[in-house]
Amino acid sequence: MIHQGIAAASLALALVATAGAANVVIPVDDAASSLTIELCVSGSCDDDTSSVSGTMDFDLDMVDSPSTITLNDLNLVLDENININISFGILGGLTATGTNVTVDYSTPGFSIGPVPIAADAFTLPNVEVIPGGDLNYNATGLVCTLLTGSNLPCNDSIDLSMNGPQIIDMVPGQITSVNREVTVTVDLDFTAPLDPKSPDLGSYQISGTVTGSVTVPACDGDANGDEQVNFDDLNIVLENWNSTVTPGTSGDLTGDGMVNFDDLNLLLEHWGEEC
Ligand SMILES: [Ca+2]
Ligand SMILES: [Ca+2]
Image 1 (cartoon, helix red, strand yellow):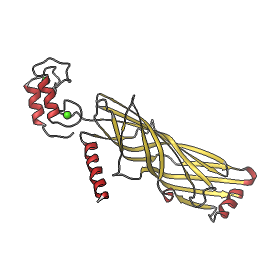
Image 2 (tube, rainbow, N blue to C red; image 1 turned 135 degrees about the vertical axis):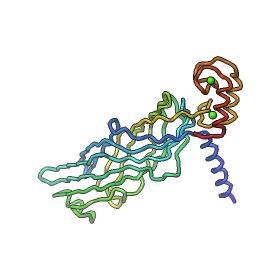
Image 3 (spheres, protein in one colour; image 1 turned 45 degrees about the horizontal axis):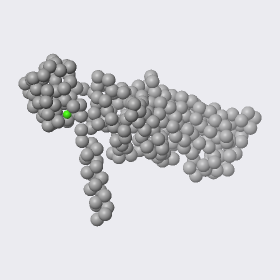
Image 4 (tube, rainbow, N blue to C red; image 1 turned 180 degrees about the vertical axis):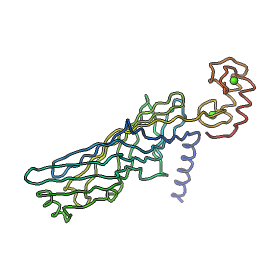
């Protein structure tokens, strides 16, 4: 019964949290987004950077001047191969190529947030991601000996998803919304072992900044910007009835600077809609 109570309370909270939320699916701007993979073996490291494509899926409490943000999904794809070369000179070394590397939100359907937005900034806690792709490596000399000692071959392909999900304690982000164009930027940084069974062997770190923008279509009939057309909007229209206002504000839904029957008609046409 306790569990049922908690489940019911969680459901009620979820319903409250999603009421009036605007969903924005943002294509990642590959020209302004990049992730770096640094591979470290036996204390020596090398890194390579790729531009990033994909999508980010968020909910905002409102499109204009949002005060909360919720993360629904992340699907990030590294556009280029990652080439790593760690050399110990005459003692050998390791070359590795990462192909089709991805970073995906590992629990779609289980959202994080809403978290508050303050001065265009927010922090998403405990974001669980799962890296994907293949890491083909070739080890010689000392590194090969180390791998053999961990019962790993000196030449192999590692499926990066085999390590399972990785939890990023804090993902800082920034958001701006101007004329319904929403831009979100997040900073990712996490480190995972190369082989969870041999954590001393080495690790890789994925870090970088991912950003993108999307223009959210106008929500006809929505006077208060919460992406729903209901009594809250009707009240705003009635409060400003027959007034001259700044166009597009204070219940002027048609953008002509007057609050009158044209606005009421538009509101009623879209009554009950969610944008
Ligand atoms: Ca509204
Ligand atoms: Ca009007």
